[in-house]
Length: 376
Ligand SMILES: [Zn+2]
Image 1 (cartoon, protein in one colour):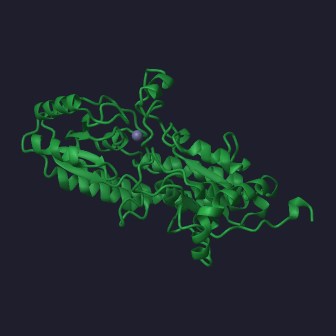
Image 2: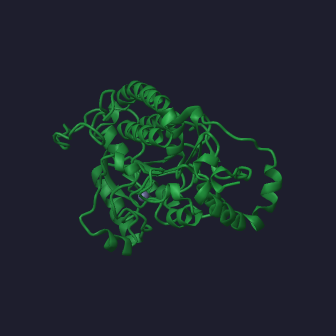
């Protein structure tokens, strides 16, 4: 039998990475046995299948487009676009810090089977993803291939440093190319969905109509939800916040919150006593009553700062899957907006008139208001 017509046997799915509700799933038969022998077989199996994948390609894969994402929010957006035409799973869980995901052998197997890899980019996954992609020996998802989908190419990147990236990396800054935490605001979710619809259509031309129709339906729902979120969050405009990691900027700009400081001195650099003291002074002077942080960071220091300043700590899910109720993109943003509105409380009785502090921010991603419906 010539290699091109050979049928490649596929191992059973592993308990990890996480499979996404909404997209289709495969049989769990035999999972227990496979789990039991996984520690011994995983690497050898990865190499075995990797070698075959180079010439079997998608023709031998399941008929559904096999999509792998690095974070669960991207998997949820892929499921919105792909629906029953794709199998999608995420390499990390929503409650994990996406900068630091353990590079397990099972992730190599998952990548080996992928037709498409959707990732955040901007160095968010640079500490763990590149060696896994390389070891997967899957030509379809290598850089420059149609199946390699970098989400950051679809959005307007914020917080781009003026210092060369290599210098920042050497200092331990984990955002050397700009802020990679961009997936929450509706404009960026729309851009990601549209990017996936385009790229999935290239990879699976027979599904192009489905992908485009589903992306349009997602856009329409998103427009309605964005109006609702904007109204609910109107009282937040101009309220001052401090965040743990510099990861909420896209969201705070969208909601009109005023971000005045960070518990980390630089993105990824652990807090120091000096920096904490300065931050407490700043928070007292500026009247900051809210600290936002991802729920995967330890909150002990934030609690200490809160006690000293009278602020409230809000440990939020930053991704789908970070808390049990966040199963979709809409669940996630609903929960975040509601939590901030509730924690911030009513607007102060006599706020200082806010000068045009954000002059003529252009419409679009990161602007003060979400765009009306429609592709960017
Ligand atoms: Zn970060």
